[in-house]
Length: 212
Image (cartoon, rainbow, N blue to C red; front, side, top):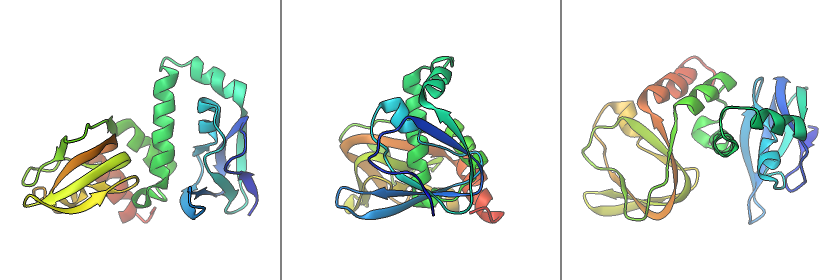
C-alpha cells in the first residue's frame, strides 16, 4: 500500500523491482483513475521523468512487500549517455515500454516477456489517409495505437473508430484467416506493430503457461 511515486510530483530517481510487485495508477485529464500495469522483478519505473524532465506520469504503489533498487537521476542519465544508442532512441523505447505496460491486453506480462516485445516491435507514424491493413490481405502482425485516430472499415463501410491503447489485427493471428476489415488513419499518430511470432511467443505463450 505504500506510495513510491506520485503522479505530478517531480522526479530525481528511478527504480528497478528486485522482489515483490508494484501497481501503476494513472489519473486522466477528467480526474478518472485508471489501473495500469503490475510490475514485478526486473521491471524499471520512474525513468520517464528523468529522461524527459517532466513530472511523474503515474502513481506507483506497493502491491505487496517490495524490494527496490533506486538509481539516482545523474547516475541513470550517465548510463544512458554512455550507451552506444542515442538518448532519443532510448527515450522512445522507454516511452513505448511504459505505454505497453498499460495496454489491457498486455497487463501482467513478465519482465522477460516485455523485453522480448521491446526487441521485436516496430513503431510507425502513419499520415491521415494511410491504410494500415486491408480487408482480405494475409495478416502477419497486430497493431497497438499509441497516438492518433483510426477508422475500421468492412466492405467499404465505416464500422468503428479506434484510438490510444486500442489494438487491431490480432484476429488474423488467432484464426489464421485473412484480414476481416481495413484500418485507415484519420488523424496522424503513432502505432506499435507486434509481429505474429512475438504475439504467439509472448502473449499467447504466457497466457498458456499461466503467467498472465
